[in-house]
Length: 80
Image (cartoon, rainbow, N blue to C red):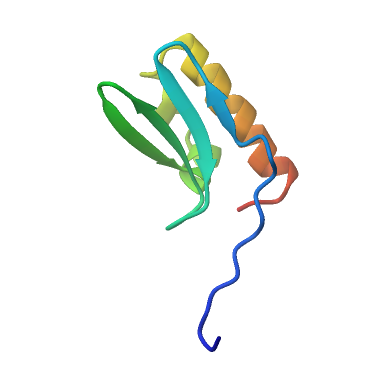
């Protein structure tokens, strides 16, 4: 078990299912929020989102709301 990293346990509700996409809070390979839809996948680093909220300007309003909820969850559980 030498050299094995310990990652913080994620809470149960770390995924938001929307009409056309799914927004998830993930820990591997770094803490990020993943937006997956038919068009593709986007990985937004949590640290960058906390610094620059303009990264989510191009998202739809429902995706933006889901990202902000998961970002607040990451902040409250000190997941940075």
